[in-house]
Picture 1 (cartoon, rainbow, N blue to C red):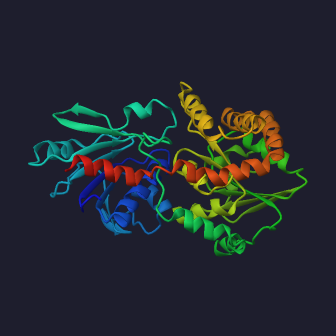
Picture 2 (cartoon, helix red, strand yellow):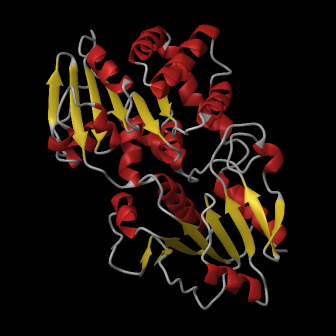
Picture 3 (cartoon, one colour):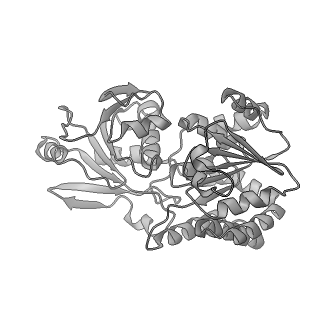
Length: 383
């Protein structure tokens, strides 16, 4: 196991909470599960505080959950004690003064570029490769779903916590009470929605208004709300607001910390998520989910989406697999009519989809999670 080292992790906050969400989980895991000395440099403490309310955005340096939180601003002043390992998260560019310290240090740090998660097969050949840059060696660490990749971020005891929560149905009712909300009926199908804007969302919500089963949609305050002008004025939405339309009840929830969001995902029957952090947390919830992948101008995200769907749906029956792929693509393309058709098809395969979702986490974590693979990677190069 890696001996106690000092880590500098740099993160720029992009698209609200995705990058910092993953980086914060990794920093906590290294500090608490592997007893590492972790400094987390963040350029936007105000956004960070939305998912970690104990953070004080006005303080340049503070301790939180055994992680040393630092403000990354300009002019940047590196810590006078150089780190053993420096991670630039998601290709952020290190400050020039940090690079100078690394280049002139008597013992150069292990320099790692933590890449974005991908299910594409090509990352297996690129994971862990060194690159000579600015007189130093930088390694590229690719999170992924295969045994050859860098793995997936997941805390050591998460599955036990989730199992205990889901085995006690009263927990999700209590979750609502703790948020100051009136719990919805237990017989309803619970759907959490934390996606980007999509025209497919209002179409699904309208369809669910005529559902024979009561539908409960839980929307944390976020970008998805801007997809609903036909239902309500997004500028008037406040946390705690409830809207009732036919069989559909919509709860608008406040943004919350990561642990509370995890429990929301564990409580729901289906989770609509986005980006990278909530995408993985929905998988660890062991429940059916839909991924609204971050859109790219050149449509490169479609290849990434298909690569994941190929891995995720491989064990499903052909008809269930087809309906699942149709739902993901329809939502990402904003095609409401196709999303409704796919949803209706998937309802027929609900037991199969739910069983697969429950088994999936154990399959993809069999070779170790991201933190454990990163620890071993660093240990092998710091001998």
